[in-house]
Image (cartoon, rainbow, N blue to C red; front, side):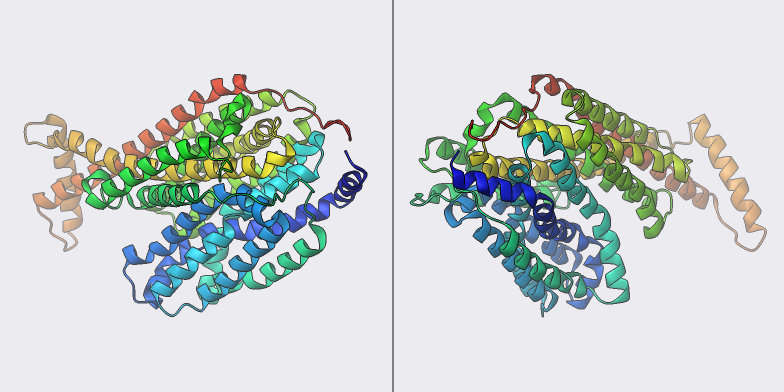
Length: 523
């Protein structure tokens, strides 16, 4: 290692905590912005005179452009220089946030959300790469604990912050609040981030086919996942067309990237079995996490009658458990076998989701809260060793490419998880309802008994001037049957998430323990 690079590494080591704050600040606001719009959607729809299906494009457009940019991050960092690209991304995100808040109609808001996704997509993988390069390998666990706190904290605070700002100010301010933070972030990146000598490569030939196929493939896939359930999946012609387009484009992308001289995504990183296994584990871990945290608030609000505040209180302790577990896991990952920590996290996560599959309509607040807290604990112990081991054999020169792939698989896991559980919930309710309603006949003894009891109860209240007929009794029974069918659908969806989670446990044994940092001059 040359003298200049040694001095650079020393400077990075001295300022590593300052660098950590610098890269996590824009990453945190980007993660918050991914979920902050959800709770303000109804206000945005009313303000811009849009229908609910039209308004959801403000979410979909951001997710699509975000998904396209994430895997390009490593390549774009090599072309423009990572520091320049990071500053440009923050600037685009900040400027588009300002324009989102000033949007005059739905079309303009969707357009600026696309630009916001383009700016925000690079922030997570670049931040992770910079942290992993700044901290020596023996401290990668703590570096990923810092990164993980931001990753997990964002989805928790996003809906709460968005709801509070919308109720007390207006939906415009969920975007305006990004502007001062973005300006501060640009200044800090300019002052404290330095590109290593190996990052920027001049004379790189542009992979036009890779850019085109990646954009079309991931863009189509994200729309399919986000809109599929609402459009009844493959019963919709445009969903079928987008699915075929996504599949064909992604297959051609893989072929192109394997033979391109300067691929936009270096898929050769998957030759390392630890990296490949780690990405697969991350995909299904976030499949489980996002599936669970989407189902839980829907369950408590629609089935248990909770308001939005109580629903947030159910989710909150899980996030707190994750925030507490991550620093502990960051310290333990260098003291014990990280495989054991990872296996522990997976088992806890799978068991917590299994406990959710046992919910009933009689569940109290703490019965619902406890499994969510356990899931948060498991994710805290899963994320740190998983990331540390997955990146353990990646050279620093390839770190930006590797983190881009890793973040893409994480986000896709969450998108697939949400699409899967919402579909299973809708289909499961229909199936259970069809099976149960077959017993609602005059010839079924249990139905006759239940109908009689319901009629007697209705007759009792009818004495107070509310005379209801036997038809009303049947309607009351049918409403209860629908609730029970929905409850069984929730049970089934949680059970399947638990099974998916436990199935990834064998992949842990294919991964190698993280290596410590090689001494200076030996790489």
